[in-house]
Image (tube, rainbow, N blue to C red):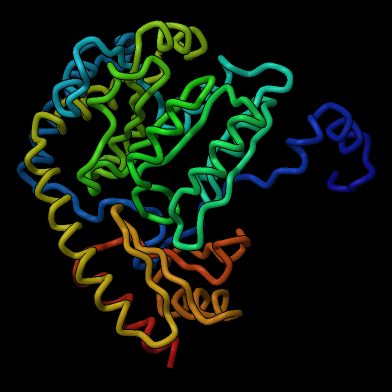
Length: 365
């Protein structure tokens, strides 16, 4: 049954696209029993009173009926909460990943290029492969800032159909200079998508600039705001673009429980904002504490995680040592390139951050 040379194996090898066979599935590690600081999640839950109110809201759900296909009420709530301009359209996805996929599905054609930066969000490259587009990553500078001239040269050479820029960048956590991004938008022959997944922690956005550029789109998610379990992403931009992307959106992609839950949560935005402010404050504390360790290079962050470089050749051992201490962070060393010897930790609750620092001290000793 599992023999490599079986008829089924031969059929799989024949029918599955070679570039898909060459990929590895996106791996999500088991975090059972761990202090989970690997996935850029908001560590805070709601009060029992708020949970009770939320459950009352969910009792309205008609599970025997399909959800509102347009998610009209939710879109209006998101428009208010995220200051989406009135003349911009909104498209929702099952997380930002589905939105990225919709964009590429609509744009995919022979020889077309997706451009981003390296290191950048891994899903840009993966979904480009899924949709048969060519991915080009432009290396960042040593401090992970944008290489403007290299980006502009890549735009001239490859004429990308779409450019994705995470702002702040994932996995490095930094905001690129606005002037550099504006130069990219002006030079781009196609679309520029600013991925603002970590907007809540950054204090800067291109959302208000949507009317200034016809080729600019802004993407957001509610995941980092404490609603990762809902899998809800948002794309805002000119209606002409979004009307086309909507054609490849699968029907009813935002289920009724997500719609009701997100509407409820956004009506209590003050709770989410307070959690965000706590995370930002704890990020500063965690950054200062990490800087005290000899041999670490700690990179400033405008997101809810911190990237740091450990002594050469020790990343895997340090990561394993932390796991042995029941602390799970992200090992980026295996990605290679500029991320060699790098680990990334999500900002958790104060006691979780303290446990991570204690474990790291023990492992580095």
